[in-house]
Length: 544
Ligand code: G16
Image (cartoon, rainbow, N blue to C red):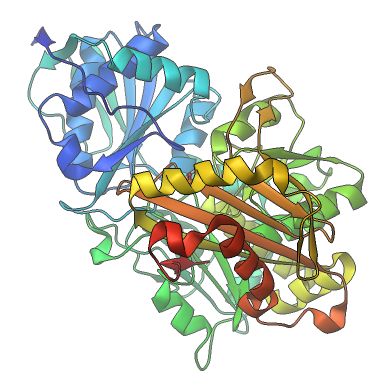
């Protein structure tokens, strides 16, 4: 087995987005494309010799081939050990857990998250650092800078490694350890939640749950935890076998794409609780019987009830939410007398707050919730957290949410996505918006008056790094908000996200259908940003 040094030329499009590099599979299949990016990671992090790396992915098309390439490149770049998930499977939260547990240098996760898979779908790769979290911007920028000048990469000339059987094999002088994808993660969950109470809840014959793994990575974890360990009936987990194309679906846990689950939870004889996760297992959607919990409310409710759960019984240091997430968690933080941090979109911005002990729980409107147990958002963790609360409070999901609204008020919330719009048109819309921002404060739209308007900029309170241009915010005097930003995870054209939020403290007005409650703001958003004119679309493609 020899180390080959292969000559290559840079690709100009390897700038990591909100969460790593995401492109169509066909882009990754170009000769040298994946190799260039992997070598850029190794060059940017620098200290690979003798180090340990974790490697796995969500099982999508091209996962297995990419794993073989990365193993051979890791061996050629001097790593001494790579821990790889069996059959190449490791959810994003499980990868974070393994990196932290074994104190590895970092890990590589192969996933395009909620984007569709298969030969015509998307693929992705991201690097996580030694704290288990996504590489911060200074590292992703170094990777990008390297990718622009790279001229060679190193790879071991060898046969493929067996990644299906647990145990160790040698690849040159490097050890490849195939690890059980579930066991370390499950042990961590058992350390945080009351598994006896959960088992009682799931086997009492009265409480039924349904978990939709959407044929993505969560299947093996959900089968092991809910059915095998906690005793829920076989069949509790639906779409539980990971498929390379996710069965042709969109592995995105929202009301649009998790339609099988939504039908069950809103149908006859509906279960008491339903949840779905995404491609790589870090997102979650929580449903009660005929009831949807917004991700922003979910974070607020977990925070308000955290001390009922063993792992958080000592209370929370603080809460962090991404800027477009609703302000519901802020109200809980205020009541608890703890800080609530507002960060740009992207889980990587929570890392420093968690490492510094400033925040315990974090969450995003994009169906992501997590805590300081790892440095990624965690889909099944959120499900177990909810079930633990339900086991203690012995109330339904809807009762718990309504009681929360009664105490804190309701933040009506929705996100409107305009997908695959022409990038130039999207840029024009954002530029125009930026141009009118200074003229908005004081302006009236019906009963709404603009209090402030800005382009969100974040100064990290731990390392002082500044991230600018993180989304346009328009706040109204009654606490309502409209936020506009372009997605950093799409692969076709641009995706405009419009986030809408209003606040209703009056219990008698908390039962309005969400789009209706936000109707005025939806119109105001169009009036201010000229969405229809600028996108050429008369309605959003996805509403969550
Ligand atoms: C990623 C990020 C999240 C972000 C989401 C949507 O999630 O980790 O922080 O909220 O993308 O980002 P955008 O609005 O830029 O498309 P995931 O689950 O796709 O890795």
